[in-house]
Amino acid sequence: MPSTCRPYRLSDAEALVSLWTLCGLTRPWNDPYLDIERKTGVDANGLLVLEDDSRLIGAVMVGYDGHRGWINYLTVHPDHRRRGLGRALMAAAEQRLGELGCPKVNLQVRASNQEAVAFYRRIGYSVDDVVSMGRRIQNDS
Image (cartoon, rainbow, N blue to C red):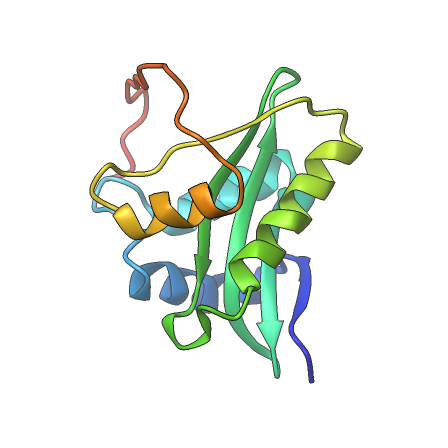
């Protein structure tokens, strides 16, 4: 059975958090279950998963704020990388954003994640001359 990209379902929670953890996307200060709940609470179709043989092997979180689109939590299981699945997930994310009228996509990558930076460069993304800033207004712990 070929890989299928589809919206997240509640029954995907354990597999998705396991995938994020395996791929190093979770952080102690972010509760991944709460991140899923927050996302699906405001945009149930903005969390896409990639399934192969009923096994969750990839995911991407897509958001649009009316000005820019955002990509978060893009990942593909290590055993399934280098097969174009990350590109396929990004294409699905960009298609969704395009359908919403989004003119530009932004994403943030940890500076230490050079593999991800290289991936995004290969698919046409470039570094913007901006400073990324943040401030926590809720603690997950």
